[in-house]
Amino acid sequence: MFGHYFRQGNKMDTFKQISGRIAPMLEPNIDTDVIMPKQFLKGIDRQGLDKGVFFDRRFMAGGQPNPDFILNMPGWQSATFLLVGPNFGCGSSREHAVWGLKQLGVRGLIGSTFAGIFDDNCQRNGILTVSLDEPALARLAQLAASADTNSITVSLDRCEITTAEETISFVISELKRAMLAAGEDAIAWTLQYLPEIENFEVAHYSRRPWLKRPASPLG
Image (cartoon, rainbow, N blue to C red; front, side, top):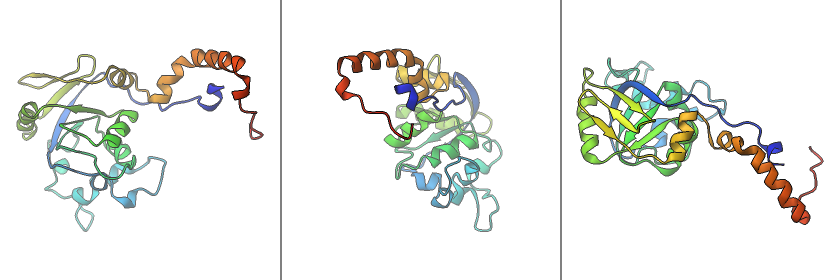
């Protein structure tokens, strides 16, 4: 039975409406090796990865914070959103990059394009990715460049980004929006339909018993 194999999905923080500062990182093609260097990929427990995020840029050779890196500057140190350049998250598919961003407190990424696998990893870990056109990104970049104007509110219910000057609408698939709002990954979302799935299995194998695999000796 389906439920025998999948009893629990990844439960995450819900995302409905979040306010916070946005930090500009507009360089194109920032890859996952920059986001999470390889020396932080040794574990799979997702602990302590916030230290590794942008490690080679956030810290100097001696380990002290780099004062010239945007996320170390007053006004951007606790950014909830990143305004990123095109093709953000390209490179290898390391999910550690997304785990680290989430641990650092990043809840949303706003840009023009995102690498496909990275975008999927953000979805399954509760980080919103928003694609906007260039004029909207340029206006956000002006606001994000100043600590006096870099606060925004993102409403997933209304699919809107609100700044001190305007409201920007964005498009997101209804399934992606609903899963982020509920704080559920694909498995957790699917399990709400478990009774229907198991009823289908019973009917399916009753009509085609030769397709049912024998029980595993391992249980």
